[in-house]
Image (cartoon, rainbow over all chains, first blue to last red; front, top):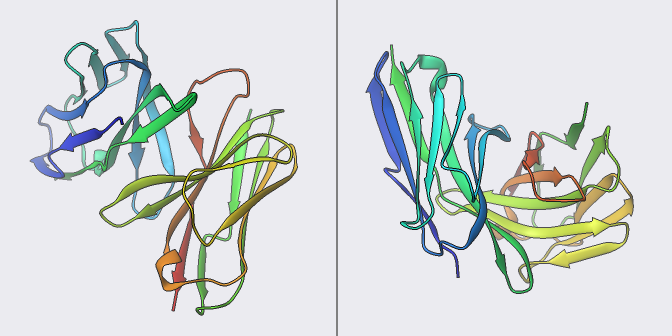
Length: 114
Length: 113
């Protein structure tokens, strides 16, 4: 059974700092990994999707990396801003029980202090 | 462009009352549709998914049911709500031909009192 872990559960940083969020998964046989952002009381917004054959994806100040063999992904946020405050979730897509399965981590709550 | 609509945004219901949450997707055809529940400290839990009209798969036994009466409409229901049904419910979709990005609705905060 695939398990996805995100550490830390919460993170507080001053504005302008670069930061890294971590995601680990137990089964390396994945198809892709997605990072999402969730604002309080809102749905999830997809930030980046990394296919299993890729090593990283970039979008603006965000960079996500994937090391399938070690079961790890990181989300790097450069020059953090107060507007980046949100909960960030990762999810892995894998094959299980004869169908595609998507498992989410519990998220890291990020607070960027002005 | 594709959009997903989910309503209501918030709902307060007494124990034992029925439930109906609706989700519709626009701008695409034959999407895969999903209902997730997000409870505090427990992460996202997949409740139901559907790959076509009338095709519903349930991931966990529960007090809820789902239906897909039209290609782009997904409904989550209950005949009698329990306190444990409280949570944040999210509808989502992916293109029917493959697994790409998962797109979520804005969610429904359900409080059962």
